[in-house]
Length: 429
Image 1 (cartoon, one colour):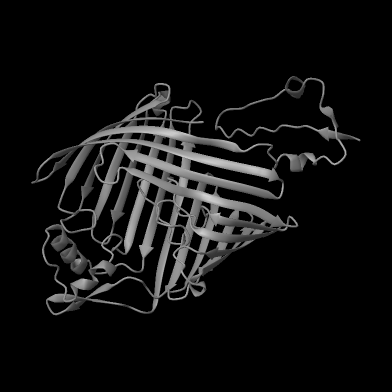
Image 2: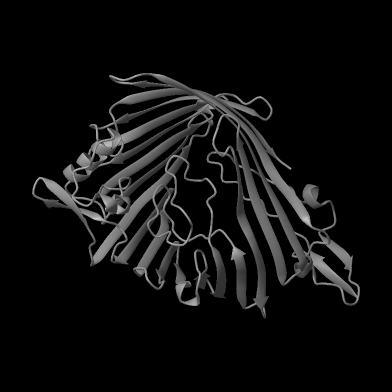
């Protein structure tokens, strides 16, 4: 049996000020139509793309060296050297179009760390299957795309650990879950059954989510429920206007897991609070490239409102300062200090980053990152200059500093400035 298949290639290159033209005769020769021999019982071409005859194995490796010098105002300067090796390995098996097994593990060895220098982490281990190509399942440890925020993502209520604003694109650990996905047109319906930390059936958590597409805008609605924990509702939106991308998230918590400081005379009492707590964030991204490639700029700005933070920062500053100075905090029930969030104690946060790739057409690139707790007037500034790469070797230098009064979230013990030089070598296999 013969089947005629039309082979076509379409390349879309979004480079401002640059035009590309293709001669399809040169691209395909004189044969736009190719006769493919199809044996009886063979998989259809679209299904064959989803099948591998062997186990696909790959990964990445890295070597990182970083030397830094920290200068503390009215304090002692210090130097530090970090040397680490890292690697990731993945296994991908697709024996038939309706089944896939995937696993990924990470390894990091810190040469200069005396305590627990070797860390091995299982990043992903799951199986994909489906029912009648209509309902899709993923069972096992998996990364979950839940929120849309870049530096902050209160709606990301499923993954383990929050985003690190200094490295927002770093891969994070996902939960052990059963994901059920039902696509309907351009909309998607999900149900996550979560098993992390579960010792009995009633502790299994449920997290449903719906995604709707309207024009260029995607809206997500979801929730989280687990016995013994406060339920949550979430909403996300992402869209674009011209060259600017916008995103936003909102989470409504029916109660809080935190302990809160309440004034009690000259001291404070740590109490639990009931009620509704709102967390919301909004931000945007923009990239500009001129026709000569001398200005390749990308910027991201994001605001975050934390309804679990303190409108009055004096109490948390006093507690923070006492802990830094290894003194007894001014609270009458210090045994509950572990429930008080010292990081993320503000109500209003702002973070932004600007990246300049190929500065003035050179091989140099630079980035500046700023994060601020607007509630207590403290923050971080981090700048990096990436030097021209030599094969797989990428050198960089940078400086970081903080601002804010002692006892604030980022002010800590006071003003400090660190300069660093780093070299990284990495690749994939």
